[in-house]
Length: 384
Image (cartoon, rainbow, N blue to C red; front, side, top):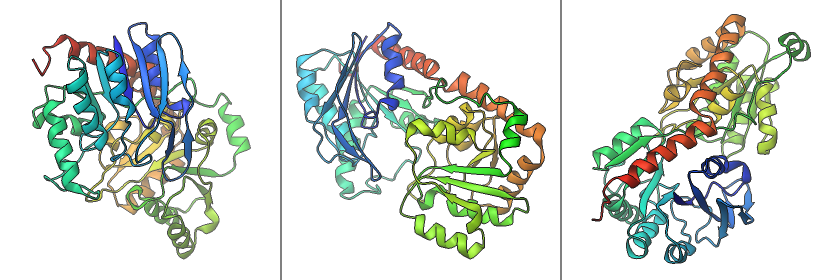
């Protein structure tokens, strides 16, 4: 099977594990089209070409690079014109300009290629209402894209339901994946770990924006009676406001503002935690779509706690604990429980690792992609 993927997130090599696994399966050859330069608001990624027998990375000039719903890769049409692919798969939402550009190219230049998107969208926006400028253009894009779309890889059950309701024939929930050879538990004995770390460490990893609910974590910290440190890894526009809030709550000395860390260092940071918290809150245009950091911590054997915003409960399953979003006292009670009950911690740690390996490993997710794409290719084409 020949698969062409367009993924603006796959510039960094550590983001290509799924595509490597698809190629290494012996059942697919993968061509990955990525922006040569991409700036996500925090850092710039510059991608170099990569090529092997069944895996090829093509960095390309990108219009509106860094804007996930507006970027366009002009080279896509020339690639479709030169080569035949069984599947064209894009990691974008249907209202994006890239999806519109891709489906027009596919219909004109390679109509036998099956067109698929990877969607996180768990809010079905009212017609023409989007949290972007020029919403009428995004509404037009979605209408045209959905009418010609063959398949959706839904990152959550809500996305699957949304697109099935729109009449899509092929929709399957396939989660994000994690390299369990990179994210794995500490090999130190528990007695050694406890002797080297005297203080209970609560961690948060992610953007510092209102929807992530970091302010709730700071307020929960103020309610806890035991000694602890809150390690915050990430950056964002709310950082100054959060630092002021910590001072007002009298917890500044408990908070460690780490800033973003390179991906290579993240597993070590996670292993140093006693618990990871994702206290997201729902907003009119966003609710947690998956929570990748949860599976990264779970793969490291770290107990996880999340709010019930969006897809967090589904991601955690029975491997962690949840609390009602926005409920500070409930979050504090869950953290107190984890601090006090070492048997619970051991149980959650073991469950987390088992769930990460069974549900989110690169190998497991790659097999789901192959199965789904095979079923799509075996069905009658939409345009015949």
